[in-house]
Image 1: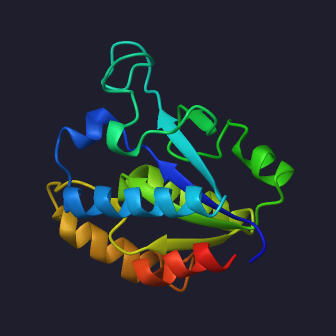
Image 2 (image 1 turned 45 degrees about the vertical axis):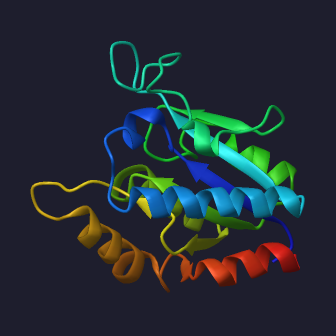
Length: 178
């Protein structure tokens, strides 16, 4: 692991204001990772979704804004996207290549949509992907609770297949040691 980046996906007002599963713990953990990354000169990259005019994620609206508790500073890179994957029709891959990034610590929303699509795209591009526990979330749906979706994706789909799901302590250690 030579070059590590923290990728914060779609932690936007529209989603946070709807109170996803384990919201407070997820935000708290993402904030810790951002502060640790910044303190160790690791880049924090933000991803922001735009669903188009007239939607909750319309560019320029309050709902589209990155949630203020985890907001980027003026020098941090923001990837603007219109699809589930942060890699699809964006410059993210080229940007990561220009910085010689080989490892992505991935956090954010929503597990079964943008997190899953971004993770699998990153896997296809052969990045090493680390998912810190309790740093991603989603909502209850007609089939599963947000908690069940969290458990299913993190421990049955992603871990040891597409990514390594690690404790916060282990991920902070990785940030401090690299």
